[in-house]
Length: 280
DNA sequence: CAGTGGCCCTGAGCGC
DNA sequence: TGCGCTCAGGGCCACT
Image 1 (cartoon, rainbow, N blue to C red):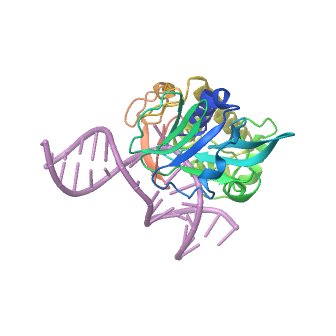
Image 2: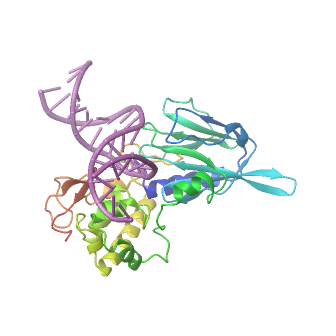
Image 3: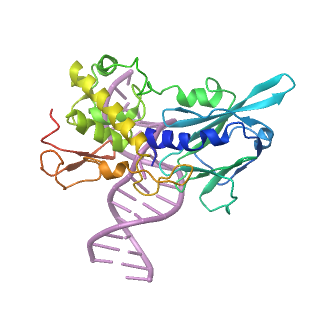
């Protein structure tokens, strides 16, 4: 489910409310992608800091109160996988079969619901150490980092023969564009998704990065995409799916030129594009 | 080392 | 209604 916009919308929907909350307990359900890597009981009494996002991961810093102030006590790195969502509410709803984490605090319960369990909750001593460092090591730059340019894409992709769409999705140069937004950004930039990444000219790299930023920014603005069930931590759905130009529109007319949107498979994922508007 | 495909897991939707 | 098949927003890892 969640690409960068959904993760960011989720973050924004509970970060303020959970800031400063005191952890009472951490309850885990069925195993997720990786084990927690710490004793859940050890988290009791810690205070939740400012929730951060890195790529499609969320980082919940935890601190322990000492006489002289607070001392970092690691944090939880959370990934929503394909089907995960977080809710934060004071009402203690019954634990469902797909609820695999409850972070119980004095302000409410942060709950991860994830039917497919591709998601993860991992304790790490900090963002740049332990499991968090390992998982974040391969990530590319943040799309909204102003110092990132089309020239960076151009340089990083030089010589790469794989198709630009799966390369963009791999996220080792710029993070955040999953299947929906990679398709949408390539449409907006007028680039054929089958084009080898290394064949993109410098100006087209500029245009692609602009498109990635515009698509992600717009999706965050309207609350993300709710294809099946995405909801933020308030339980509110997003609306971006209503304005996709190509994603999920196989056979329907291109909104620009009217020719039917095509669907192909690249790296085991569906790619939607307009063969007229998106050029080689 | 770049590129490809398998795989983790569950549910929804569709054709028969 | 039920069965079996395909597909789904991600990403790690083994293999070539």
